[in-house]
Amino acid sequence: MRISPPKQRLISLSLGNGSVEDERVRDINVATIGNLCVDMVLSVPKLPPKPFDELKVYMEELSKSPPDKVKGYAGEDQLGQALEGSDIVIIPAGVLRKLGMTCDDPFDINADIVKSLCEIIAKYYPNALVNVISNPVNSTVPVDVEVFKSKGVYDDRKLFGVTTLDVVRAKTFYAGKAKVDVADVKVPVIGGHAGVTILPLFSQATPKANMSEEDIRALAKRTQDGGTEVVEAKAGRGSATLSMAYAGALFADACLKGLNGVPDVVECSFVQSYITELPFFASNVRLGKNGVEEILGLGPLSDYEK
Image (cartoon, rainbow, N blue to C red; front, side, top):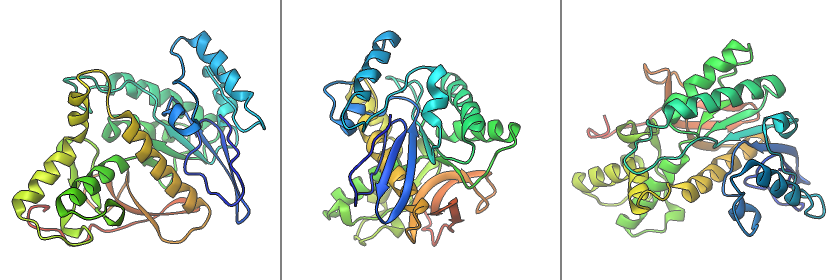
C-alpha cells in the first residue's frame, strides 16, 4: 500500500509501499509483506478478507482512496511492484500461534515463507532495512541471513529481528508494579524473542523502584510468558496481533528516524552481534542512516541477570 501523510508529520508505520513526507527530511518508502492490522492503521471498516479473489478487490478499493494516499498489492506477481524503491521492508507474514503452541512451533511454515520473501527482497531492493516479525524470530532471522548471503547482498547492518514487543511488555509490567507512568519507563530486554531467551534487565530500568528479587523474577517470568498469556486468554481464537502491530510500528518509527539522521535513536533488536559468543543476540542498538550504527554493550548486570 502507498500512504502519503501530511507535511510536518513523520509517519510511524506505512502498510505496503508507503511514502513518508516531511519538509525537514527526505521521502522514505516502507513496504509491509502480510496483513498487519490494516483496520487499526488505516481506519478501514474491516480486516482484509481471506479468499484471494476478494482480497484483490479489497486492495483495489483501498487504492481508490483520494487523493491517491493508499496503494494496495496482492499476490506474488505484484510483490516486485510493492517493494519497488522501499527503504524499509517489514515482514509479519506467516502463521500465528495457537493454543498449546510455543513461539518455536510455527517454524516449519514460517521459515519457508520468510525465505521466499527474502529472495524477492534480495532481487528487487536488497538495500532496504528488513524488519522481521515472523516467529520464531530466533530462527527466522538466521534463515534470512543465509538467503541474503546466497544472493551476495547480505549486510548485517540492515537485518533486524523485531523484539520490541518484549520491551513493551517489560515496561508495562514494571510500570504497573512500580506504580509509575509507563511512558516514563525504560527497560532494555536482551537475549532472544522466545521464552527463557527473553531477559528483561530490570536492574537497569528507569525510574528506579524498590523491588525484591522475588518481584523481579515474577516480572521477568511474565514478560517471557507474555505471548502465551495472550493466546490462553483468547482461548485459541488468536494471538498477540494488536500488541505486535503496535510494537512493530514503534520499531519501524525508530528505523525511520535513524534513516532521517535523528541522533541517538536506540532500540532493542535481535541482530548479528559480537557482544557475546552467540552469533545473533538481542540488545540495544543505535540506529542510523545505514541501519545498525552501533551494537551497545550489556551494561552492569545483577546476579540474577548473569
